[in-house]
Image 1 (cartoon, rainbow, N blue to C red):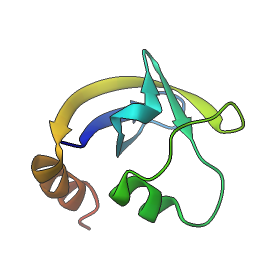
Image 2: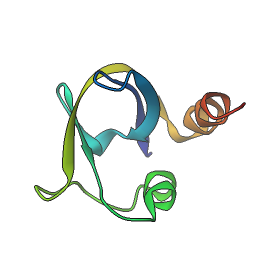
Image 3: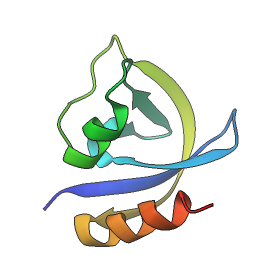
Image 4: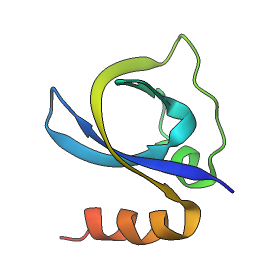
Length: 77
């Protein structure tokens, strides 16, 4: 089962849902490019050294089903 983390980006004080493979301790690897939503949703990419790295606080880890709900709540306006 795919796992996702809800993380708080310390510098920008924003919250996002990301694949758990993008999180290593207190760092989130963040890809460059226009297809970010697809990469997150489909759990398609593994992080690489060329990705940006941001300091985070990991708030929680969820499975795919719970993550869809959390993502929806985070992005409601």
